[in-house]
Each structure stands twice: as structure tokens, then as C-alpha cells.
Image 1 (cartoon, protein in one colour):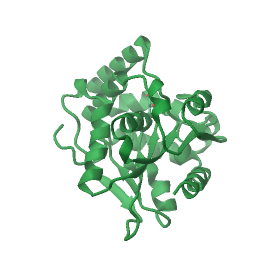
Image 2: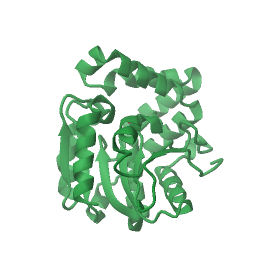
Image 3: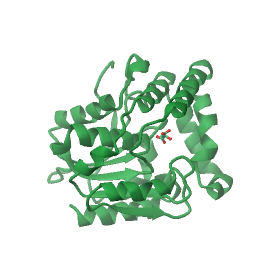
Length: 265
Ligand code: MLT
């Protein structure tokens, strides 16, 4: 990796706020996927949205074919340590959730609380991995547009995809901004990620699971098993949203976060 230094966007940093809410975006996005949380919660708490390695303005992992979720987790831990942060409230969306599971495994002492958004603990099966390698090949050939074409229609609840044209276009533009090497590295990292199912019973911190009721990529039906494995966790299902509840229903999403964080700060 060229540099473990992550580019971050933050709001609400001030004296006395020691435990930031760190929001890890999914694939193939960037920190601005959390624009509504930065804006909507930044008056109440310290909110940090890093660009994960290879996305936004953060340098990519090299070579992409050996990228691993542990490296993404280490980049977050290194950034936090450089900042003198000893504990964080960690939220991970989808691939960001895979990284959050890796973070919980490797740096449990740094975890204050955990929010798992539209994600799952399981690893890819062989067909899933093959699909990732095919997409990586297509991205190397055609660029980020190959990732956008593959994902866009599945990202939103059907009604939002039809009606929220401006949001769909914004998300498309976000994907098109991402570098080929960052996208390919993330595909390899997702394909090689370990199964975190059994690690969930080791999670000792307050945990919230958020699902999009109409998520076609990671169905909300994944949540009950996660909730059963993580002691004391609970689930909030955001109605009428797909894989991007934080963008499709920012108010509902922020309310769920706020309630959880206020109860557990
Ligand atoms: C994501 O949103 O991060 C991806 O859809 C996750 C995945 O492809 O497994």
C-alpha cells in the first residue's frame, strides 16, 4: 500500500469529544456516501467518514490481487492511533461491515460500539468469488463504469430506483469517480475475506444491526442470525429502502443511529 494514511472528512470534532463515530463506506463508494450522517449528526457528535484505501482520495492497496480486509481494518486503526483515539464507535456499510468484522477481531479493545449496516458475516462461496474476479476483469477492461453497470439497478429499493432519479445519478457519479485499482483491490479483498460467523460471539460491545427492508444485495433476512450471535444486539429495519438506507432514507437512518448512540454513550 502506498500509504496507510486515510483521507477523512469529519464534522463535530471538539474539546471533550473523545470517541468518534467512524463510518466505513461500502463498495465501490467513498466517504461522501455518509454525507447525510456527517451533516445530520455532526452537531451532536464527532463524525468521521474515511475514504477507504483505493477510494476517494485515499491511496490504493498494491498489488490489488493480494488486498485483504485486514489491511483496510489496519488502515482505520493506524489512523485512529495517529490521532490519539483509543476507542471508536464503528459503523460499517456492506463491505465496510466486512472491514468492521475484521476490526472487531483484530482491535477489540478499540471498539466502543458497533453498527452493522446492510452487511453479512459470511464469506463468498466459489461462485461468488468467480463473480468478483469476472467483475475485476471487466473493470480492468472498461473502467469503473463496469462496476456501476453491474450494481446500480440492485442498489435501491425498486420505487426509489424509478422515482429518485437525482439520487441514482449521484450514486452513479460517485462510482464513476473511483479508481480502477481501488475497485479491483476491493473485489479481491471481498473474495478473500474470512467467514466471521463464529467471531460474532466474541463481540462484547453494544451492537446495532441496520437493514434496508428491500435490499436486493444483502437481504434483511440476514439480520436475525447476526442478532442471535451477537449478545445484546438489536436490529432496526428501515422501510422502503434497499442496499443504501443511509442515502435512501437519511432521516430514518439517522434517527436509528441517534437513538442507539444516545442509549450507549
Ligand atoms: C457493498 O455494498 O459493499 C457490496 O455490495 C458488498 C458485496 O458485494 O458483498
